[in-house]
Image (spheres, rainbow, N blue to C red):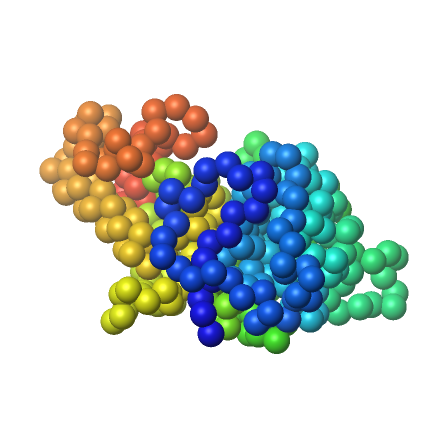
Length: 340
């Protein structure tokens, strides 16, 4: 079977800078999606962008977080739901792709930009396991148990999110597996990296992995130490992702490879994940060496341990700055979480 070329769906703004060129055109007839639907590019709602990365896998950009869309005979599986404000547009974007019902939403964390769209998006679907006693149809929302705990009983200054946004099913095992749309869907527990509620979703036949915010190609990874994230967990997660990701080897000129959909940023692959992991490792090692010299956090910040990477990955303003990244690593190394 030919592997797909990235297909940018209207509106056609430039988002393909990081995508690999030279892949062959998608063959819509090779999927379980009706050919009439697959052959007509959907009109994406204004403000969102949709690309097709596999014959039956799409990614919606611009909804707060990236949303992976998987189609098949059982319906639509979404990874994350985006923000509440953009949820109606997400529903419209899904409907522009297919008439199949939304059956399952998997939340990769408890972050607002991933989960506050749950109520509106799930209301547009039907449960993956229909329950005769349900009050009304809605898609199943699955997440790690800590997502429920973070949303319902948060710590610090956070307030509880409305119960309508909470997942309807949770899991705690290392992996939650199911067979949906004629393929194995595996939801892996990756807690302790970005936060204590992380999940990674693998579509095994499609060879697509949705990483959540463990991988964020816009900047240095967000390590939310207040919510159970750590540098040790982040590096362990990136190394584990590398074990799950297959590069375009040994035939590098052929188009096969695992595709990675990060929580934010462009669709990626093994080579870029290696570069990202190596960047995080190098900065961690730099900070660790300075700690061993007896440097304080202020002195470490002044020493610029992110040199060589700051121009590309660093941010001086915004919700996640270079200084915050350095501080998160410093606290993770000087106050390691037990078991990490």
